[in-house]
Image 1 (cartoon, rainbow, N blue to C red):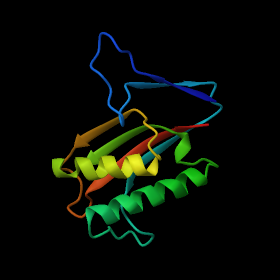
Image 2: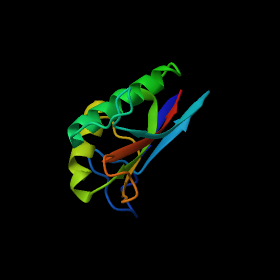
Image 3: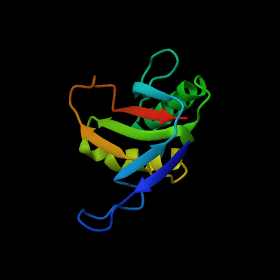
Image 4: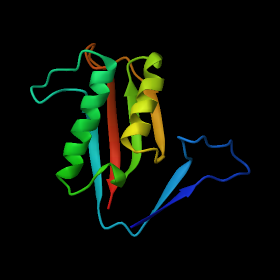
Length: 128
């Protein structure tokens, strides 16, 4: 599988270091579509803080990816659902750290339908 970042320099606004417009995936043999993943521990209890929930989310994603013989390096798309706009920066920092600075297409949506204990939910697509 080969991935190619697509960031046109004319006719569209500029991408930023942690954001890309598109990621072309060539010759994948399989995809993994991961449902919204919460910052819950194995007992289903939400982390008490935003940072705890983000750490749990990325741990949960690593476990789910590993079940398909994948890692975070296979992630090609992320959608973040945030309970509050104040969570944007922490979510971005956690994503950048988890992906070791590798940018993938991402969208953050602020929603108020998450349960009060659930601060962030991430949905990913991975390819191999």
